[in-house]
Amino acid sequence: MHQIQAHPSLTSLFAVPHLSFVVDAMQAGSSPARIWVDDLDAPRSAFIWDTTHCLYAGGDASNPAFTDWLRGFIADTYLPTLEREKLGGFKLTLASPEWEDPLRAAFQPLELSKYPRVCYRLNPALIPPVPELPPGYSLRPITRDLLTAADDPGVADLIEEIELCWPTRDGFFERGFGWVLYSDADGIVCRCTAEYASPGQIGVGIATRESHHGRGFATATARQFAQQAAQLGLCTHWDAWTRNVPSWRVAEKAGFEKISDYDVLFWWGE
Image 1 (cartoon, rainbow, N blue to C red):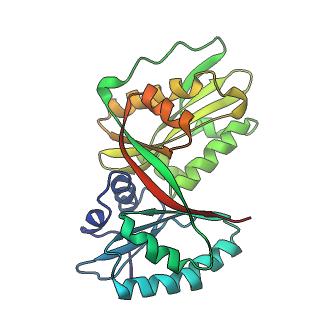
Image 2: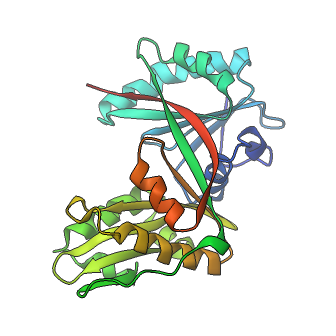
């Protein structure tokens, strides 16, 4: 098998709404990834590892040479790394259902669970105004200076998110953007960041401090983010677990429309 950074045919192997923007970002170097294909000239099958918890399979699932290699890679490289690095578990996203059986076989003896997810895309015409915030709260763009506030616990969480989703912090500031909702008393209480960036498109990562749930802060931050994404002309995606109702409801309140439902395979250690 061949490890690559990019290939003109790679996007076509992952040509589904919830994966194409992710793979494009990896090929653009905006998201960490190790990519393998079966053939350098005309790849039929591909496997991607984001170097932590996320794995992706695309193209032809009935390619014996590739699936044989994949079983060896998982047994000899991935699972030992999972244990050594204490990664805890992983999520497998498939470009087609045909990959499920080969991957279940490759990960034996682990028992993989299946969970539904949902993907949304921003419709700029549907973005509502940003709501008025209570006194003592403000929306702020993410800047390098913002990340220097060492006494704010929200900063550590924000840095962790950026460094998980981007190869470097500089890469985020060069090709991404984001917003936080800031409390004068508590610091950052919500963050919304660009991820999976490639020319003309991005994904969204968002989280609210648990103590501030249910107050509309995620909706306000997401709308501010959506407005900037629309101004930049970006095709913007929002991906969530189907059972995470608060997440996709915020997406809908910020102007996103559902474009696909899909399943992932999932394993998390005891």
